[in-house]
Length: 508
Ligand SMILES: Cc1cc2nc3c(=O)[nH]c(=O)nc-3n(C[C@H](O)[C@H](O)[C@H](O)COP(=O)(O)OP(=O)(O)OC[C@H]3O[C@@H](n4cnc5c(N)ncnc54)[C@H](O)[C@@H]3O)c2cc1C
Image 1 (cartoon, rainbow, N blue to C red):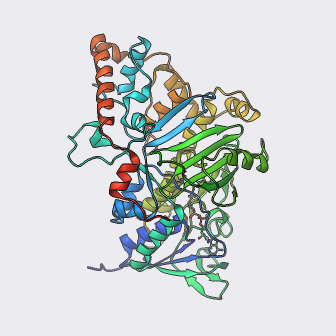
Image 2 (image 1 turned 30 degrees about the vertical axis):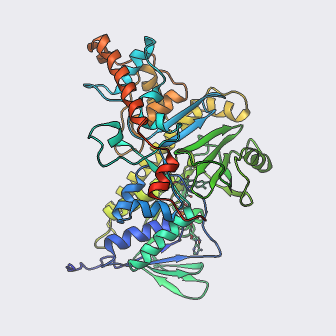
Image 3 (image 1 turned 135 degrees about the vertical axis):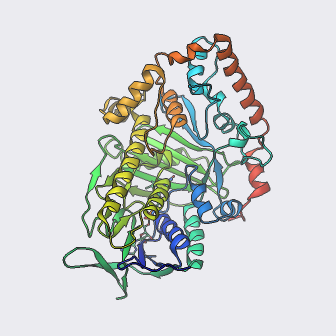
């Protein structure tokens, strides 16, 4: 039943840009509000999309569920694979390797999280490396994967396997486009050449395309990528630059032929002045080298990338420039920026698509009913800023908590001053292994504990409540968890076999 509309209600939305951000926004808004709101999308074939962005965090499955997307179909259509976490090589010191896995570590007991008991057992020489106590971190390097089986007993590690996806970004955009158009989204191909604003308010009234066509709407979503056509070029929302903490400002990317079964994890290998990603898909492997141009040249960066591919390059390397930071106002007047137009944090923890999803959810939650009440915009901006800043801190942690001193770049990041928020997280963990998640920050206990330990931050002691449990019981708990995790991992098939059975894509 269509409800009576209030005066001034939003009746039309125009999305400017057809990359991952544009089509995710179009698919979600048309699915949720499509009967009442006319949704249009403008994209320019000439400008194209950024063409990278292939690793995710587990939240994407919630977005796909909202759109009633079948998981098997999604993986098949996007040449996707599954991801249990990220393997970090050479980050703490050259030769180090650890996995930041999704999911949980061990089993909590009483008031204390499992890793507190592990700290005591380890101090007594009775515990293995933390990776043995989480299903994801043990299964990933063994190349094993499955989704939680429907017959897994509740509260067992198998019932709680947490995972994300790797996929071909261009195929995902195409997949969403088909759905969005079927849900009524009207797509116009063309380049926006002018933006028309209302005289007094400065609200965007319409955009004009090179063809002369004019597209008007009540609400505009700026998904124009780094160009930030509406939010910056038109409204001058401003940009907070975070390069003093995250000095990488370029990436060179190239796909290569796959040479073996796909790993169920993303790989990040630290290099002289940055790091290299490796993202396995069904039909190829995505690679890129993220680096700081203050420390190495583009030519050196490309040489390092090419020298470290595990298959033959399938295209010419592509250079992308960026400045880490975020827009001072992500929602301004009747323009909401989603995707790269809202800000950018380098892809070390695959968070950009999550930020798109969270921007969409928040926009739908704060969707203006009548007019543009200022509190909606202020709430949106405050929440997005918080989310961006906490992800920023988590990324900085990987650089700051290094012991590497083999290049100018690592000396710089190892000794730089960091935001107070991050410093207090590190100090608290170093004191007695504690971490408290604040509000809606994306990364929780498992993530912070694994990365802090993986990067060599060792707590001086454990929480005193651990001593309230008998020593024998602590050791038994730790040993029992290790055995249960190992036994569960042994039941998981190989990643490639799981894909072959459930979601093999057509050969590309
Ligand atoms: C090096 C790198 C690696 C990344 N890796 C990951 C990752 O592993 N995981 C992850 O989650 N994210 C990653 N990202 C981020 C991810 O790529 C982006 O968040 C995602 O692709 C969204 O991009 P977008 O849609 O905002 O912009 P774009 O893909 O750039 O799309 C912009 C759109 O706007 C259109 N447009 C622009 N100007 C105009 C105009 N004047 N008129 C009409 N149309 C216009 C373009 O044609 C295009 O359709 C990475 C980003 C970079 C730079």
